[in-house]
Length: 422
Image (cartoon, rainbow, N blue to C red; front, side, top):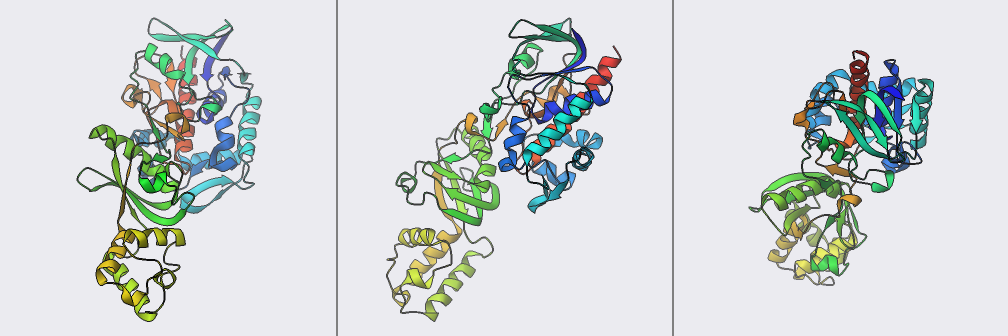
């Protein structure tokens, strides 16, 4: 059986590619190895599906530290505002939340998946589920088709590989596409976990002293060997039984991985500032004022509410201060030490959880080998890539799905156009 376009992978980029090709009048076959299409979409955003982000293009690209600049050309063709219009045309009303994140009004990710599946149906896209691909077929420098594991083969002039990376493998992203890209001559840059919890062997982590403690609106930095910040993120975090997690940590995680690799380190130092709106001197003066107001009170009660109680007790002990000690009895030196720790608590981390536990895969098909306006391979005629298989990775907050939908749209449109011209 021959199709104009075959799309492998039923995640966000694959669904968008199949729709885009169908809207261009192509006969499209969408194959996925799983039972359900859109599994990653259905669990994204905590089951609410953060479909895109309404920040400016420049800001979105800043939030995609892994080759985000490659997407400038793609955004000139189809951007985040186009994504919003696309879903609203399909009947999915969206609402804007903090930091520009866009969600369905009904807070149901499944409604996004259902709208995409309905559109595929309207366009008469042929869908094969539970259909793992054994091989992608190339002939004399161009795509020829695919062979399924059950032995069936399908021909096509154009092929879109949209099988994701290696993160969240229970949704079907198990890295199948890298071999097919390599077979076409593509370079796969080193894969690594991003948006992933971070591990630490610090004694206070091992002792679970702070396990389960959340800190709100803190500033967290990854330091280079000279103690200078490589990156700083101001968000929330949580201490865990194995290290640290939460939004600020997930965003810092890829810089931990990169620092360990770049300087061949076993450990990287992180810096936590729990009072980012004040400098060290201001924190010291504030502590002194509180103590002078109630000099006879136990210090743990005087400073209650400054930071979460468990963290306050932890910092007091680190400063050599007895929790029951009266404020008036404390030396300036100890109070200054406490102020410093509020602003600059340093601890070491020794890596991240594995790629399978990451939200996003870093690395992938080298973008140097892809036409940025078309998502077409520069090495194999009729071959297109989109989504997380590409070496593009962003922070959580709608940036990865935006990249997937934009690259999927371009891959599908251009695959259809290529096929029609054959």
